Length: 140
Length: 140
DNA sequence: TCTCTCACTCTCTTTCAGGTAAGTACAAAT
DNA sequence: ATTTGTACTTACCTGAAAGAGAGTGAGAGA
Image 1 (cartoon, rainbow over the protein chains, first blue to last red):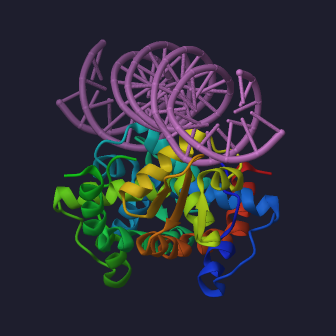
Image 2 (cartoon, rainbow over the protein chains, first blue to last red):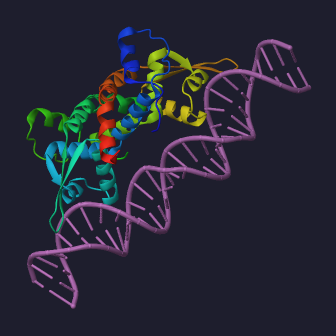
């Protein structure tokens, strides 16, 4: 996931305008960031962390690790750092020993979760359709 | 992208219900397919093809290849096959020489594009916010 | 006869995301 | 004195994804 030669306006306007001229070049800076964000968002662990934090409010590192079965420490740290960098989560360190670090979603993180609802709902609604399409395609 | 231990209902309900109990296990078959679909959808080339076909209506293989700068024949074929299998595009072969094959979105494909609008719009709306968050995080 | 087109398909090679496992710091509990 | 808990970091390794590039078949045009 590195580049998408179009932007939200393009695909969404196409719905309303029916005949849009082929998408021309846009601000490459915006383009790059949109693509990056989509890439980030589409990431498996990011989505899971987003969901778990959304459901539980505030969790510390080990609690997250336990809720997200299968994630390695490395990926958990890595993903949390990216999300923190992007302003999706806050990381609160309590300077005690043993360490205590809390993670929670920012408003931005919550809004992303909300934005993704559409796709999740689509996926659930169209499960059967896709399953059937595959059966037909595979010829049983 | 292989497994997500939750479903659309979980994350979307959380918005409304505020205090949802931790997500318990669901039908693993559904779970698997939702995850697969999200993985498929989140794929870079799938999103691009979705957009290009949505904007242009009907295109043949070489036209797609030309519109989607940077894609290899291999990935174009592969992605189109997957999308066809999932019922997102139709593939019409005209039995002439040299070959002529048309691709177009199905209703399912279009609805997926629509579902994804939310994410694209979010990304565009929050570009600046994220950019600033990164600058702060990186300390300039 | 030679070349060109289209839509692939096949093989080879490289890249890299992500897993495993070990290490670190420090204090409190045993 | 040794173990435990917490939140990481670091180094190494592997499998899967993706890029490069050559090959294919059959008719139409030069």
